[in-house]
Image (cartoon, rainbow over all chains, first blue to last red; front, side, top):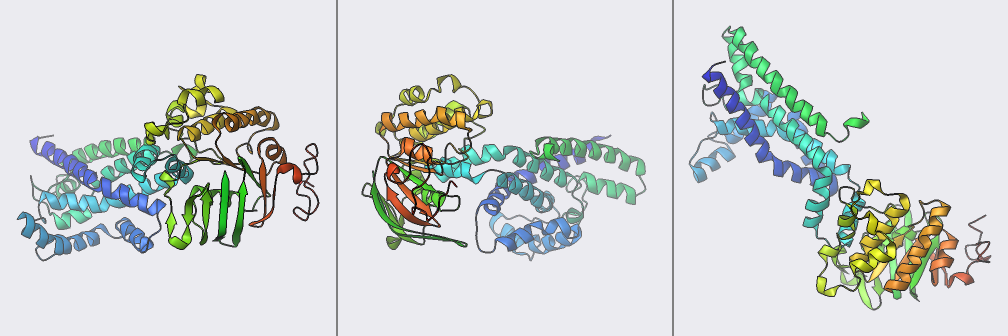
Length: 223
Length: 241
């Protein structure tokens, strides 16, 4: 394990954490809307959100490349308003991780909200509480275990993200190389020993994350 | 309390509720078989459902008026609603449950005091417990206390004793009597048990298939307080048979 490895591990953990933080409010908000509200286009949004789960990650990466690239809508916006490029930078790594892990967060959070008896929220409102107080005082605490599980799974998925990231962020040592990309790169270059070292670190991180996720998953006991 | 339901019409799937009545009473029972529309009517008053048409008035205050597109929002409706499953908040202690509504109300408008409710319902020793540590009867009393401390203008009780065995039911009925006598709060009381109607209510709406088929004091409806059978013609049949 050398300084370069430490940088790759640290970079992967930091970008995965940042992507999870970014999707957290949107994922939880959307999960609540899917679980509790009826609105036009709901099933369409539901399908689009789940697509990264079943589409080849490289295909999702290609879509991201078009959206975030020089001529893409968000790419143009980022350059115009923030004077920055997204593709082939750490921001592209974060964006790929966010898109690929978003469905995990939404699915687990939605299940967590659906498990709550809506009568509790209705009664809380008849007791004089507005929607916000009910959400933060009743809904969120009761869904907390499921939301934490979803967050941990999203983080774990972000840690392992490869297909979309390699296309949108490339493999620029010290700038966009994540653990998954470093393992792939080592295998390509014939440095299998180093690849197995990183594999060991990835396995430990994945084990810890999935164990934590299962521990918080509120329906684990029923299975 | 004067309850006025004007041209009330609710359609939900194959079920239809139509009601047009006016009645006065301190505790108005809503009586009928399962599926008669008792809970639907209570939920309309609580604001949990909106009728297709009609108006709901309590003591001259309009709660819902579809013709004007008006409905007082749930949190400002001032109803103390106790559903059949009680819906106690499982993550909060008994104390936090009973004071949940209290903290949302303006303390200057407090008419029902915390101490009085705790004393009447005898739950002082339960306050530090979690909901999971309570027996069925204790949960009932906590749910009543929570509803009362939200300073409602009206209590809505949806079959509050339905899940209790007969012995426990006999223990809880006096608490409901105390709530009625101590706090002078009007109540709408949904039940399918004639003994509860006779013990607590001074007026009864008998519902059948979403319609009010009879409205009168309980003793005019039941054959005798001992048999609790409905008089012939009330429903066209005897529901207790």
